[in-house]
Length: 259
Ligand SMILES: *[C@@H]1O[C@H](CO)[C@@H](O)[C@H](O)[C@H]1NC(C)=O
Ligand SMILES: *[C@@H]1O[C@H](CO)[C@@H](O)[C@H](O)[C@H]1NC(C)=O
Image (cartoon, rainbow, N blue to C red; front, side, top):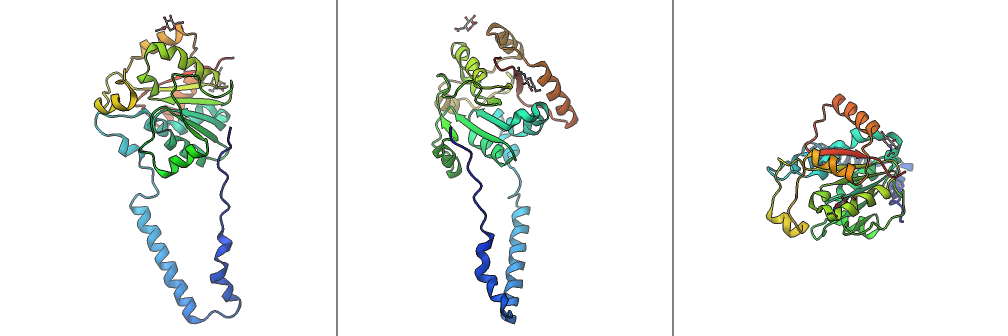
């Protein structure tokens, strides 16, 4: 398995060329130039900030009417998951559409390594996503087949949206396989039956329309397939969610890994 991308050494030292002349006495013109340059940089930083450039736009863009994505919900839930799973958040596999966004976000966290499985085509992926695929951090793989990872390869596995597109026949294979590759838990994000998704594009991209199942359906299904819910994780997650007034737009289930 490939490692996370190394931090590219920041090369602040490379500016030496500009400043090295200050060993000799700086000329007034150079000083003036630096002041003007500094002012310009401040102005650019300021405008960037106000345009929302530093913020994370995921929340707003995903709330397109009638097309709610649970991968966007994963972004919102990450701080809560961190409270619920603590140290188990250090080696994560995310499975689902737009996994690049989740993996990039996780890789920015300290002491977290992350990988992703993108179950659908990535024709419209941006260059940073392509880079993750190129490095082997994100794989494009059909989750109807066994995942190419050893048992317990990850501390936590998070799956969003993708299960809504699988029939029970494939769920029977995919869900236990996700539990197999995790060591400390499997978190499932699925849509609420009331929340309709865009349909036509769904079918062409995902192979079939989303089938949004109720919580009772899922719980019955977990029991049938011997997947146990993790009461500790459920309780901790709910406590952290209440504290931060986090109201999920998707159903979130916490399953145990196979022991
Ligand atoms: C899925 O697995 C369960 C439990 O083993 C079984 O009862 C059910 O018939 C299976 N469903 C399909 C569609 O294969
Ligand atoms: C249950 O969840 C806790 C986190 O709240 C985790 O540490 C533990 O490993 C999980 N248990 C299993 C068997 O997955």
